Structures are given as C-alpha cells and as structure tokens.
Length: 252
Image (tube, rainbow, N blue to C red; front, side, top):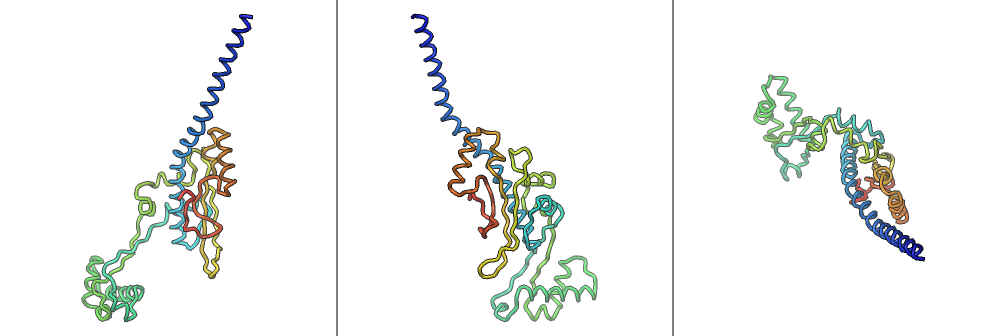
C-alpha cells in the first residue's frame, strides 16, 4: 500500500508539472508568436513600401504598372530619374494674360536654340544670360530670369536616399524570413472609374504563411483563420487591383 501511495503521489506530481508546463506554454507561445510576428513585419512592410515606390515611379514614366518583379528591378537599375530644375516663376499678371508654364518653356527653348545657332556658349549659365538679355520674345513676355532645365539622376539614389543601392535593390522582390519566396504582384491596368477615367492599379502581397511558416503551426492557423473570418487578407499587402486606394498598405 505504501509503495502504491508513493507511485500515485509521484504520478500526481508529474501530472501537475505537465499541466503547469502546458498552462505556461498556453500563455508564452501566443506572446512569443506575436512578438516575432511584429518584429518580422517591420522588414516585410519596408520591402512593400520600396516596391510601392518603384511601381509608382514605373507608372509615372510609362503610364502603367508592371507585374514582373525582374522588370521592376531592371527599371530601377537602368532608367535615369528625370528632374526639372526651376528658376523664376510666372506672375499672376502673366498667367492672366494666358502665359502658361508650358508656353513659357517653349519660348525659352526656341530662344536658346536660336542663340546657339548664332554662337557657342561656354556654359548653360552663359546661354541663359544671353537669352534673357537679348531675345525679344523672352523680354516681351517678361521671362528674363525664367529657367527650366531637365537633369538626369540615378534612379535608386534619388528614390531611396541611401536605403538601397545598386547592390542591394534586388532584395525588394523577396519576402524576408521566407527562404527566397517572392512577393505576389498583380496589376490591373484597364480599371476605369465611373467617370470613364482609366486608373492603373497594382497590388503586392506577402501571405502570413511565407514569413511566419517556421513558427508555431497552431498560432499561424489561428491567425489566418481570424483574418479570413473578418474578410481581411491573411498577410500584408499594399495597393489593390479591385479599386483605387491611393496604393495604401493594409497596415496603414
């Protein structure tokens, strides 16, 4: 009887320890999962924002979005970023008289071309100074001091301000913590509003399973199930191919 009692007590102690372990883990596991999820999503969101920046610039240059991630990276590496340097501005009086920015630029371009046929100039500054001083149409339209120059800069440096380089820009197409899985990218370049205006759309996605797949399986299942029941996308995404949303992310 004594031995049986000892065995029973021992079994109860083991059961208590096991139950205690599972009780602790039932609290610790969700907390650990959520903490890891939040930490990983910082990197996933950063890449989605980089993709959004690239797609918006691609659309600005070409008039449509691309669903090809490799083409997007190639665009960043090979296309110069054009910027217009501005000096001087049109007055209200000039605008009221019908002089627009476009017309002013055309007048200046014609004046520069005419001046360059007459003589050579050591620099653009010298060319503009001559035109401002001597061209009749420029002076008649009050455009002395007006200057617009288009310059080309490195696309990656201009868009990402050092956050990405030629060597690291390729990483934006891969979902962090996914062992090389690419972001899902879709476009809808034929979307038309009720007013008949074409609005190109894009959507980049990172499912939970891609960057949380190595964590607790049950917690991942619970998270996906929760989002689906709320009719939310089970992951992180930016943009929408269904309707314009100003290219917002679902975390914003």
